[in-house]
Length: 102
Image (cartoon, rainbow, N blue to C red; front, side, top):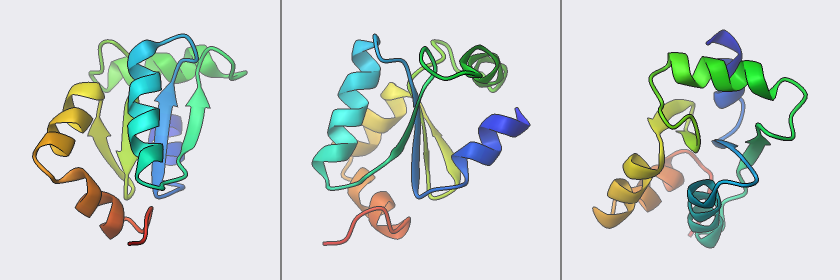
């Protein structure tokens, strides 16, 4: 879990994803739409992707992708991100993390 957490804390927004996952694509598209430039780790294309996926599962994420860190904090998967968006809390969170500027 140390590798995933360390990677998740390196940038304002970090997304662990799979290039073939439609939910990963939707969450990336949503976050990009606000002008954020997340660091994306595509687990199916990353040399250490299987190990990272095991760490994500150990953190309790099933399915294991997408998983989003914002402001050095583990936010969660697609359900958590969409809930924050619907509640109007995602943009303020991105602003606070300095991932976007308005």
